Image (cartoon, rainbow, N blue to C red; front, side):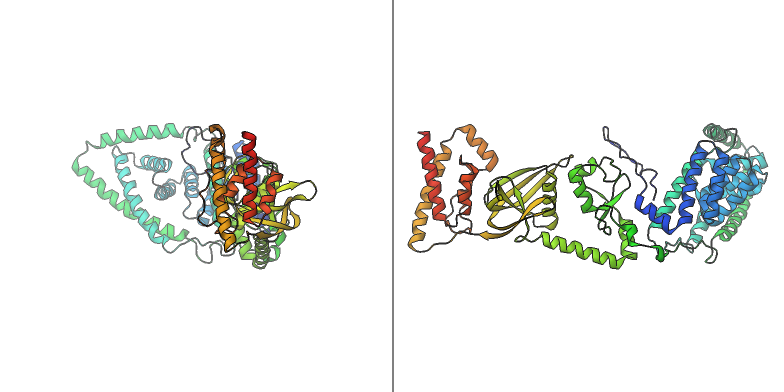
Length: 597
């Protein structure tokens, strides 16, 4: 659960480096409760690594001794402690720990390398050479393993053409030994823990990175052998070239003799490797047992959100390592762009609107708390269903006048309205009511439903909402939810007329349309451009003015652009007679025209 770095990759110039990841607090605490031994051992390993980097080697050894007593089947502990013993020049102990690490993890390169260097220091050259060849087979590109194998072989043979022959020998050996390893691996698969999916693999990967950190910072010898490794490799590469040039002048008969000798050694070493490898493979009885979950210790309270005090639902983890329900975190960020617990800045979450979903926690809850999750999901679905109702408890934005078919851009910055807009999007309705404010009632009795067409979010949490009017409504009952207003509403429509009334309405409709169009075109160019930029062009005249339950679109457009106070426009929204609305618009246009003249 510890993230020690990020995947390697290129970053564009000027691009901000991502923040370092931290320990997941909830999962770390849960692992500490369910597996106190391994969790404490992991903590001790990190403390030992820190002491080792600070060159407090003996103090690091004490930490690792305690860790091994708590987790005796962790190959990393033995491998790293072997390195510590080697630094302290306790080579027998280093060899003992390296052998245990090799048995626990037969394919571990570092364990075999540390075993090889301990054997070499103890003077067991042939065994050390075998282990270095083993390392070369596991990682053929590792220069240290190849150079050590060449150095030991040259020390034994000490012939002028030996290094060229050895290089051919190593290459052939790697190909042969990889074939052996592939065959052996067909019957040896690392099984994932069926009780706790993903956790074992992630823990192992994390621990491997920690081991790499220790190996990279360790001193192979007290006199600074690792510090001079680069110079040694360069010198040995030069020696390889010189030896190859010398060997090229040998007679063909001598070369043929050496190649035959090499083939014999290759077969012998391959057989030895194959036998040793099969001995190291874990059997069903000897393999490390998978950790089983102590179900009696597993409690739903360990996976509760600290904000809503309920079981995590859609858990997300912040860069600072804290976990919350997605909806809970979003509501907190509406008020303050900081982590609710540690107060670390989370502006990047607001800017991208992307959160790190905690898949492991979701799987843990689904596997070990299925009934609690079922109940939690039921509550969530009931809340979403209630929020989706467009007749009861409809969210009301108290701000300005809105009309059917007329665009209404909004700048959202208040926390309660951030929450309201987000809920409208999450439920899928994408609709809310717009009403004028009222000093006595709170908001007006009539309003218009707006539909969200697009939302543009900013890094500080503000947003610009592009909405358009849909339907008119009358408020039946006012209420509140989480800081914003709600209302039970009923939708209103225009009353249709027929016969002579319909013909009269058609004539009035055409007359008022021409009057409104003439008034608009008589405006100054600058004013017309501002109206067009905000509201768009004037809609065309409908062939049938009663085809739309809310009346012709041009009527609402005209009301929106007329220089009237909002209180004077509100009665038009409440009218259910298109004839009355048209007559009202005609009187307003006549009054404005008289004032202009």
